Amino acid sequence: MSAQQILYLSRQDVENTGLEMPDVIQLLEAAFIQRCAGKVEMPPKLGIYPKPDALIHAMPAFIPSLQAAGMKWVSSYPENVKFKLPIIHGLIIMNDPETGVPVSVMDCTWITACRTGAATALVARYLARPESQVVGIIACGAQGRTNLEALAAVFPIQRVYAYDISSRAVTQYVEEMTDRLGVEIIPVNEPRLAIVESDLVVTSGPIQKVPAPSIEAGWVKPGTFASSVDYGSYWTWESLAQFDKICTDDHAQYEYYRKAGYFTGFPRPYADLGEIAAGQKLGREHTGERTMSINLGMAMEDVVVAQEVYRRARQRGMGQWLSL
Image (cartoon, rainbow, N blue to C red):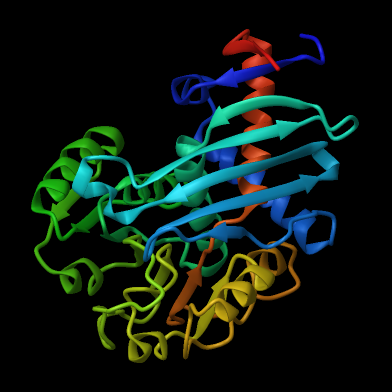
């Protein structure tokens, strides 16, 4: 490699580096502890919004302890399902922090899905009951898959209830995830049935600034942990009021989005993931506590995973070198 070349990694290349979910969870935990100590440079997401509920975000981060510097340029277009296209598209660009020279460009879709699931499992390790066995999945897309995979890497999962507005999506999810994880997955035809018996709940539908929430008070049993990957879009205020602790992955990002018009009427987060991982705030304090994390997705998560993907790809001689 010379300073005039960059390593391109396709989605298949990224997946073939062999990075597994427990590895990603470990990478994220180290990054969150660094973030809490003030040792990560990460400005709030900068975005453009070409269509209602659609976005294209620039997400830069620098983690000095890992010498990892990069940016994700990612789009989220919920209406892409009408065109049989993925909702998420994007790239990650990694730079040499010493010279600023770009060293790699890689597809971001696998990394985005994987690190989002890993963040849920990481915060659940602190906020959920360790014996949790039953999961409720609301929305059976990419996040429904990786969140369940990540939770299964941390908890002794035995049974899963799966709901989606598309019956076809539920059927495909049940078949695929049963084969992948070997646990019982039960399709349900209304969201309440995915929640009422669950120890762990993940909601990951489209993010909406003006949501039409459907999850009602009384559905979540005592002791449940919930991860709202959809920025709380499907939780009524009354259902949120029943949680003893509502956390987020990062206070600064949460405040940025609140000022942008999200989270209207939501309670102030008790803690962020960095504070909990670093031991500055307590996680779960008693068995019957209802806990929730609203994870927004952070650039450092993408960059720390992309750095490891880049390292493994170079070690294995993967990808394609391109001239700048």
